[in-house]
Length: 107
Image 1 (spheres, one colour):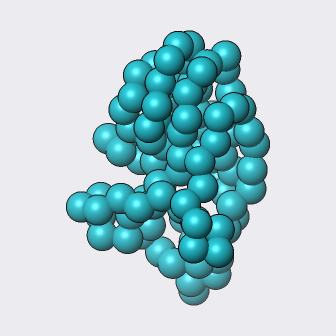
Image 2 (image 1 turned 45 degrees about the vertical axis):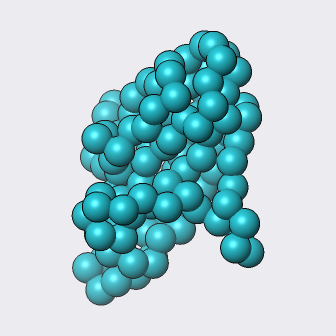
């Protein structure tokens, strides 16, 4: 069964998924935070990050933890929370050696 709000794709080079972005739908129409999922899987040798855009994709910034940009080197599954409406999310591969990174944002 397809999820009502989901985006998935594959990356196999140092590129990004900004053209295939995901926008979480905030709850109840009153600005309640949106919970959504991100899963990255596959067999790959790459460094990747999650990016978000607050201006309809004009600018993309890596997500951070306490001000430090986060990057990953393997598969992961995480639940994220977004409190602002209209925010776009994408994956960027910053360093690539081999394999295919498969990603899925869903809500």
